[in-house]
Amino acid sequence: MSDVASDAHGHDHPKHELSYYAKRIYAIRDLLLEKGVITDKDIQRQIEYQEARSPANGAKLVARAWVDPAFKTRLIDDPKGACAEMDIDATSINEFVVLENTEKVRHMVVCTLCSCYPRPILGRPPDWYKSLNYRQRAVNDPRGVMREFGLVPSDDVEVRVHDSTADMRYLVLPLRPEGTEGLGEEELAKLVIRDSMIGVTDALPAATLK
Image (cartoon, rainbow, N blue to C red):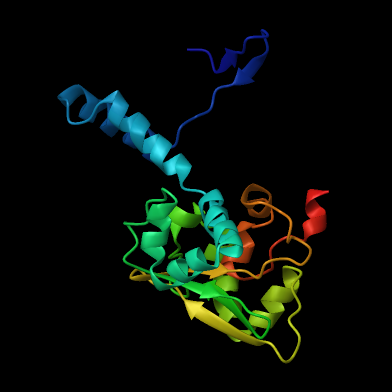
């Protein structure tokens, strides 16, 4: 068998060699399909569900909270219920807490043991979040970590670090950027980046949209 494959333009490229574990996963999938345990539609639905879990979900929640004080109250008091209002499925999270940043208090989330993270809200955790370096420094030097992400809280701002666990997941509600009073939810959501919902930095400035 040839070690190269031709694309639609006739160019040859080396075939991607699957790892042992990838081959094993595909073999298990094929066996489950053959035995009728799952169907192709089941697999596709699961793929679509996983792809729908992204930071865009968190951005929608934050943007709504910025424009709707009543929703913000519900989001803080009953995060799962507020997620359901936005058609976001957070039922897989055991305990879910929303941490509101203020001018005097900033929150930052870390998982000191592994990489516990609100995946239905933020998707997959970034590599740096899972790294030993971040997990240690977030506890010992949170302000230093923030500086590396471009955020420099003044000395009178309290920085609180929250340790995410298998039972407790967190979402940081960042401060609404100045000069965004006339923006709608869709525009505001574009300013809400994943890292701001972990708490290592702020939402993007309004000028980003220009």
